Image (cartoon, rainbow over all chains, first blue to last red; front, side, top):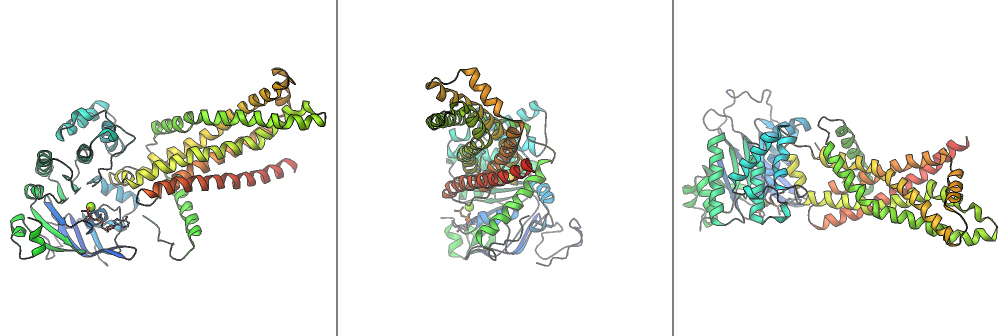
Length: 264
Length: 259
Ligand SMILES: Nc1ncnc2c1ncn2[C@@H]1O[C@H](COP(=O)(O)OP(=O)(O)OP(=O)(O)O)[C@@H](O)[C@H]1O
Ligand SMILES: [Mg+2]
């Protein structure tokens, strides 16, 4: 808790055991605890995300995966423990600092969370005009079309979210998040509800984002193909803490019965 | 960002008032931030104002009509039928018009704002806006509250006017007045001191309706049923606020007018 850290970007002084090489991790969670009422969701969760890495998080339904990444984005506040992003404790940030930090974070909601009073095109343009304060209509239009093309839904630009299927909504949500070219991406089940072909395309897109923009990502998924394609490293969340860590192959051959069962 | 939760120490209604005060502060801080959402304000004025014209207009018209129909027989007994236009005009414009229209608007506008923001909250749209680095208070709350504050007074003026029209129709059934005579009598009895306090009052009503709708919607819980709860409690609190504000306004105008 009492983390004495005078200069956040002072990288060379801080080399704790869990930092890989000489790089400070992008996200560092330590002993995170979060309860809702009497229900303890996260009990003692610790993890790091390194620069440029794709980290896949597995875990059974209701284990608190979404809760964990919401703490990272400052949508929820942990009860105990630390949640550092770029060396800043998210909980302690002022409103303005948090807004600045959030410009660097992309968050794909499990539910897609499209703004349903706006068309698909307006949904994608919203962060461009409101956050990046872009004013050039033709440039915005170009970016929006390009991004929609990336998720294969160019023709949906004038549709309302209520006219889209679940999988389409998911892809539009992804497009709306990626259009900001965030440095950190938090994907909450990016491929759930998609057909195998699209879901492979989306996994490829996640990989492309990582290559092209050096995005560091946390990917929550139940889709093992997606995990196989995208992951550099994987974690398993169970009963409020991360119980296993390793590459896809390592976890597939883990000694732990529960961990192995994800791969069957 | 959030203040320390007071819910465990204080009774519900107290911490609710505390939260409303905090929300008011958040609203006030965001009015003057750069990047005011003019387009969204205009859209909200259209939705809140223009789309309520039908309901408010009919309510106003029937209000005047019924009041006249009801009062003409009694006034006749006193031989005071010629006072009917002034009576309707004064009572509608001073008191009944603003209150009835504000209560109607609580039902129509506060509930729809409460339900809309409530469902945006439940489906994580507000979270999505926030996490993208945009400012949902500025985009959703400021625009709606200002639109209500502007539109409810205008709607009330429209309803007042139509109530006079309804009053004319009501008295004309018995053939008591010509159109010109009726409106002459009605407007003659009205002083500026009748209209101004009533307009100021409706500005506060409008603000209360927008504020309560936004507060209840924005702070609704998770789960679909909270959308209904948000809409419902928005109507209840907005109506209550209208009545309380009206009582305060009546006291103030009496003090100011007779001292
Ligand atoms: N805002 C909230 N209020 C109360 N309880 C909550 C809230 N958000 C999450 N929970 C609870 O926390 C637990 C973990 O939820 P979470 O959404 O993180 O699960 P998950 O691991 O993402 O599961 P899934 O794979 O199904 O998405 C659940 O039991 C849920 O009921
Ligand atoms: Mg989840």
